[in-house]
Length: 117
Image 1 (cartoon, rainbow, N blue to C red):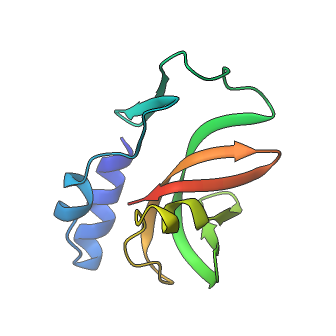
Image 2: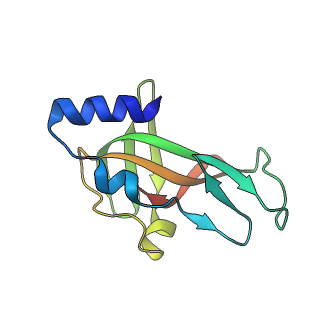
């Protein structure tokens, strides 16, 4: 359903989603992988808890300050740390106005992006 919304927004704004949708999701082979936007653990790492939880964050970038990126969602604003994605060269262009899906994890209330598409 979210791809439908992204497609409709892109059509209205005259953007192309082809390259963004064609890229494979980030894979953390030591703990699991992303499959169809769902985290699938492989059993080599502790299960997700309130302390550490794999997730994704989507929205529009509104502020970029170094490795901190503010993303506006429908009901809230989220600040993500994209340093892990920068280190892995999995960010593309991080710029205000870009609609993104960030894959990563919540650790002690902070979101760390491991890949941004």
